[in-house]
Length: 317
Image (cartoon, rainbow, N blue to C red; front, side, top):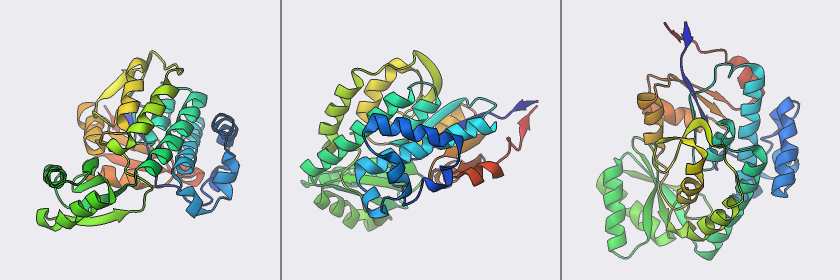
């Protein structure tokens, strides 16, 4: 009997909250906090345990704490034996791609922590250079949203598709006026607009300055030549060569996150039958159930949740 193939999912920015590190404080994985602190120049323990939730919305801090909890969750899952059968692939939503690369053996924790620190700082600075925002259009197909944003740009607004998260859930990004124009046109394509309280126009051309800073930081980083495949945000394809990642990571800052297509790659193309979300929150699990309702999905957002999850409930003959 062969265990069903699994893939690991890692969440992105937006899942942070005050005290999010407390459940992990007495686990063996807490030792990773020191490494992330050393490499990022931030007191990660303080951020995880005591920092006010409002301050954690700051882009650079949010990315560090979400990344740290994600790698701790993976480390504890590995220690527990949950990952005794190696995953056949990993994927991470936006920032989560960095935790996915660590889990896949493509990138060491120290290098990943340094890159996350640079990425978050660079994105925050880029957002300060050009004010922007994001919004979700719920209920419309992606093609309709793409046409809506194209029409808005033709009218002089700056707005683009930023995330294709699930059927009927598309995020747009751009100037405040551009996103407002897209949201105003949403009813015309059968969509409901929802604002997102973010600090910038992420995954849009507004992040070009951040991409250049990240390019410079990546110049000194070594990736594993071969590793467990990671399905990339920008093309929804599995990549198992470390040589691919510098350009993919740079491109990710200014191009859309193709999350729905990535999950379909894991399930339909790669044959994953169990998806395990590792890190704060359970957002990706809910999204995955919408994309692939026939696939088993579990979330590990705390040691308690880890203890409640057993080995794959079904096996292949």
